[in-house]
Image (tube, rainbow, N blue to C red; front, side):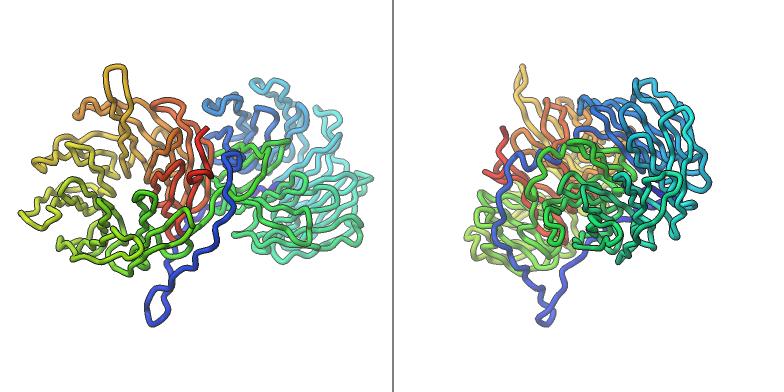
Length: 634
C-alpha cells in the first residue's frame, strides 16, 4: 500500500538541461503544440494544499481534519488541519523509528522498523495513547489495517498477519516469508498483495491467517516498491518499471494488463476508484486515469515541495509524505484536466516579461522570442546572444543580461524583431532594469552600473564588496539589491550611493513592491523572495517601507521551497521556487496569503499576465498558469 525505508534516503537535486543544436550548430527551434484545453479555476483548486506540516516525513495518513505523519526518529506527529492557514501540532508520539502509518477508525497502526507494529488509540488525537505492540524480527516498513487484522510488510520475514481484535494484546497469527524484500502491502481480504521489490508482486491468500500462502507471483519490469488495490485491479509502483496494472480477478492467473510510463521512477501508488496517484520522488505526483487498464491516460501532475516518498488516499483527501517538507494534505474531490502546460517547450528559458498582450521570452539557447498567449504560438523571434540571464522591456525595446555587452532588440513590430546596436558595458551581468532614460546593470559579484540609453554621458558605477547580488529592482528613488547573505541594499538613483543596508530574515533573491491604499494614503510594501530559511522555513517576507532606513517586517508567508521570484495577479501571488516548482497563493490580507496550488515544473522567473501567470521554466519551456479566461479570480 505504501513504501518506507529502513535506510536513510538522500534527496537528489534536479538539473536543468539545455537545448541541443543541429543544422551545423544553430539551435533547433521547438515545435509549438496546438492550444490545449483551457482549465477552469476549479481545475486548479483540486491541487489545494489544505494543510502542510513541517519536518521530514516517510509516511502519512488522514482521518477527517487530523493528519498523522510517520517521521522516522522523530516518532509520529499528529496535526490538526481544520484551518489550512493554521496547521497545529497536537502531539508527538515518541516512537524510535516510525516508518509508516495507517488509521482505521480510532486506531492508528505504526510500522515501527525494529520495534515491530505499534497500536495507538487516537480517540482523542491530542492525547493519543500507545495501547499495544506486536514484536517482529527485522524491519517493519509498512502496514495496512482491515477489520480485525493488520497486514505488515517486513523486509526480513516478508508478510506478517497480526490479529488486532484486542488492541492491548495484538497477536501474530501467521507469516508468509516472501523470497524477496517486502517493502509495501495492500489488503483486499482474503487476498493480500505484497511488493517484494526485485521479486515482483506476491499475491497471498490469507483466508486462514495462520496459514497464508502465495497463490501467484507477477514479475515486474522494475523493483516493486509500492502497491494499491481497487476491485480486481492492483496497481504496482515498479520504480524504473513505472506504473504497472495487474488484473487479479482470477488470482492464480493474475497478469499485467496495462502500464503507464510515469515521467520519473514510481515509488509509491494510491488508488481512488479508477484514478491512480503515483509518487515519483523529485517528480511530484502523477495522476493517471486507469478506467481502461489496458490504456491508462495521464490526467495531470500535482507538485510537491521536496522528494515525494509516499501517497495515500483517505476519502476525498490525498496524504503526501515529503522527504524534507513534511506532510501535505490535498483535496482530490475533482481530479481534472492538466492545470499547467508547457506551451513553448524546450530551449532554456530564463526570463519572461509581459509586453501588452504578448510575452517576451529570453531563451539562453536561442535568443529572444515573442509569444502570443491567445494563439499559443511564437509570432516573432531572433537568434541573438546575451539573453542568458535576465531580460527587461521598456517602450517595446528589449534589453538582455548575459556574458558580454547588452543586446538591444526593437520589438515595435513583434512579428519582426530587429537587433539594434548593443550597449557596450562589458559584462558579464546577471540583472538588468530600465527606467526613464537609464539602464541599470548588475553583476552578482557586487557591481551596479548606471548608463544612459542614448549612450551619452559617463556611466556611473557602485561597487559593493562581499555579497552575492542575484537581482535588482527599481522603486523610485531607489535601486534595491537583494543579497544572498541576508541583506537588502538600497541605492539612491540620483547619486548612485548606498542609502541603507537592511537586514533580511534569510538569503534574499528578489524584492517586488506592491502599492495599496491605506487610511492615510498609499502604502508601499516590499515582498522579498527568500531562498534560505526564515525560522526554519523558506518564505516570502513582507516589509513596510515607510521608513527606508528601518523598514518594518509586517508579514511572513511560508513557502514549500526556496523562493527566487514573486509576481501578483489580482488576488493571487505566484512564487517561483527554482527546481522546487511554482507555488500559487491567494491573498487573505495585505500581508497574508494561503496556498491554493502547486506545480512541480522548474520555475526560474514568474510574471503576471492578465488574470494569471507566465513562468520561465528553463528546459521545461514557458508555462502558462490560468491566463485570462482560464483562471479568473472569483
